[in-house]
Structures are given as structure tokens and as C-alpha cells.
Image (cartoon, rainbow, N blue to C red; front, side):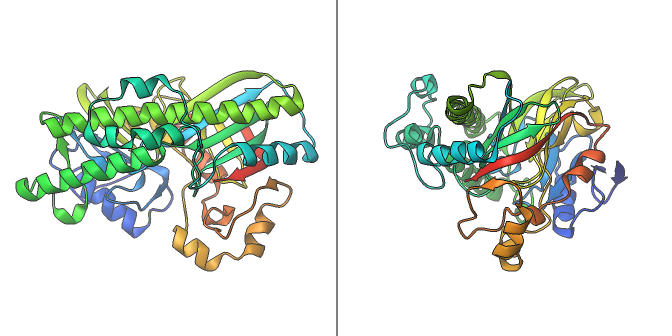
Length: 380
């Protein structure tokens, strides 16, 4: 870990290199008048909107920043360890083919509304109520981009199932709605320079409290979404293998929460970072074609008890699609049963940092438990 100070607060960095755009965003975070103690950058840090992906920010004065959470509120990973120890390539293909037919991917939704107790307890917030009808059809849908389902071979000699998804369109709509409100209020109050794109909301205001409640609802939806996806994926897997689940992990990596650090009550924003308190289990995925890790947090206070959420991009999606060819992308997936790119090569392994380096550089944040190697992947 290295420490630099180019703004009001220090920036603590668990990365060998930080691109210029991400560094400037970190400096902007450090200059926020309500930022607390320091800014932490995880090994997978790269430029985002307002706040870098792989950034961790603690704030005082009950201030919360929609753009420091991001648009896919509650995006995360769910994983299940099974009692199955081996699987052949043909069965992997059969599982993925059946999953592709029964699990909505991309912009597809469930034709019938899904049942979930959370729909009956949705907060009376206008943007939430507007999106409920759509959300009923989006629960248990994977989405697109970097979302995926996979079958993994564990170093523990067990087969694991993984799902990467979030709060779907309801989280996106909530994020944009409250970011617009925050920008308007900031324009009037001028708390944060406009160019930072980090307009805050105070939890002492109705708007701030509404965002927090809506964000927490989206976290619950995202968790339920992954649970339903994992359940469907496992049902297919079990039907063909007879396997049983022996352990599950489900963690968010885009959210804000009230926590206590360095003796102060703060709001910790993790944008592309997961909570890693001592003993807390987590999943750090590489890419669709590279290993992932089951980890255990060490509770390092310097990172606000956080660690990376993945390998982190070395190319933007636009750049990756410009330079990566189908041949290059397919070559990187050799030996893995794969559902196909559908013309989007932005998730090819070479668009990401080396997961082994990412894990090695944060040994003071996490303890690796199980290495997971992909056997089959269905891309969102």
C-alpha cells in the first residue's frame, strides 16, 4: 500500500498503477469537505463516473453521494459450493444450453411477474413505485454486459456455481433519479464543484433520506435477484448431476452503508469494492475466462474493511471492442464451454487486469480460500 497526498486528505492505494482519470477522481474525492480520514483505492481501480470503480469513501455530516454508489446499485456476486467433484464437457454444455433457454438474458424479462415478499413492502417513494411493475418481471433476470453465470472448478475439489448480476433497471432508475436531484441541490448550494460529478444529498433532508431508503430497497432486490438466478441455475445443474449445495455466498459491491471507523460514525461508499471485515466471506471474480477467488476478509481498518470487487478493467468497453477481435477473444476462452460474445468483446479476458496480481497485492486485506477456474460460462 502506498500513500499520496495531492488534495485535502491522503489517498491510500493498493494498486501498482492508477490511470490518470481515476487518480484525478480520487483527488476530487479527497477534496470533498465532508470526506473523512482518507480515500482508499483498491487494486482493481479504474475510472468511473464521478468516483473511480474500486474506490472507497467515508463521509461525515450525514452526507451520501448517489454517484459514489453508481448506477447498478447492489451489483454483486452469488456463489454456491456443491458436493459435486467432477463434470464432463458435454454436461457443462447441456447445463448452459438449458440455462440459456430458461433464464432471461440481456434486455429479456420474465413473461410472468415473479413473486417476492419485497414487492409487498416497497417504500412509498415515487420512482420505486413507478418501476415496480417492470421489476416484477425483471426479478431472476441476468442482464447484459459483464453479468454472467458460470460453472467453476474449485481448488477445494468441489464444483461451484457463480452468478454476477445486480438490481437491474430499478437500480439504474433510482440512481439517475436521485443523482439529478443531488445535482440540482448542489447547483443551488454549491457544496461540491460541478466538474467533480459528485453531488451529495444530506440525510437531514427528505431527499437524502428517500435516496437511502430507495438504495437499500434496491440492495434487497439485487440480493433476491441473485438468489433466484442461482436457484434456477442450480436446479438445472442438479437435474443433470444430482448435486447438492453445501455453502453459499452473496455479496454486493456497489452500495453505501452506515458504519463506524476510527471512532466516528460515517457513511462508507463502496463503488466496485466489497466489505471485508475480519472473517467475512467474499468472492473476487477475475473475468469470464480467468480464475476467481473465494476470500475471507481481514478487517483492515486502512481500507475501511474493504477489498477489490474483481480484477478491474485495463481497457474501457469502447476501447476493448475497438482492438479485440473475435479470434483474440475466442482464443482466450479455449478449454471453456462458452455461450458466445454476440458481437461484444468488451468482456474478453484481455480487457481486464491479471487476477493473480490483484489477489497478491491485497494480502493485507483478504485471505484467499479457494481458487475457482471456469469450466463453462453464460454471458449476459
